[in-house]
Image 1 (cartoon, helix red, strand yellow):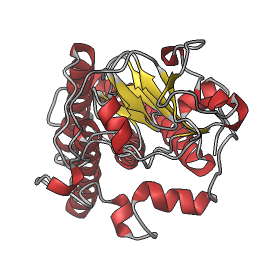
Image 2 (cartoon, rainbow, N blue to C red):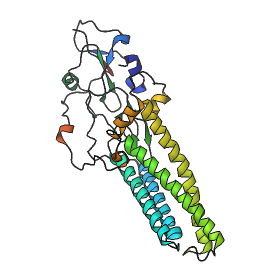
Image 3 (cartoon, one colour):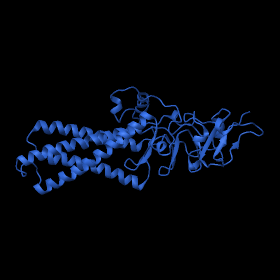
Image 4 (cartoon, rainbow, N blue to C red):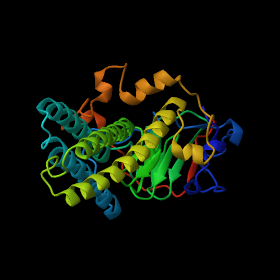
Length: 329
């Protein structure tokens, strides 16, 4: 387990503050011997509960994302496929593109509306700490911004205003943090957007070749100038999002395989905890052994809240100190 020196990495941990003692006159471990609280001890909110961040910038970016997908859908269907004389070509490519676009939007919705792993807010009370039944020598850290007990590898998000378990980054395009519970959906979103971008670019190449060989007035239901403008805009959109989402997809898969989030790499907090093998980490992130459900954004979909997922937090006054050490009795 990581040392508390590592766990004191964040500014919000309040370095240098005096640790609160749970008992008087007891001997405590030295800083290098203290054991931080595992992330499994402190429960997070239910991942099945509806989650939505009311951030203006994020909402606008999410709407733009959907509009760009709809624009690509319009150009592919009404400019390139429907005017085509080859019915089989239109049906096959139309079905494939619409399927990928649907999965991309479904993955986006799941990434946006799934709790990324938020720590219960306002649970930094003496009563709650006592209910954790921690062992002597363990250290508890409080986030002064959201007044929650901070588990191992959690970071505070200033947009979500919560501490997020295994937070990778806050993505405005999905209007949510990418964390422990929704990283799978974010990976699927980037993968499907990259695939429909690549597919649209391939269709663009074939459509341009077809129109150059034939009359431009016959290869589209729109006028030649309007057709060219629509295709050029789709070309820029496809290239931009193919590059961007491919890089994001590769970055996320690398983060899963190395068990290092983006924030941890940025702060140099790497290699300080036990890391599972790459394939085991992938199975953990995607919810089990390799199967078609890995690529299904609706896997484990649940509109009901499980009462067992919600742990009642004992009421009490928020503690003042940001570092609390369980003494050795």
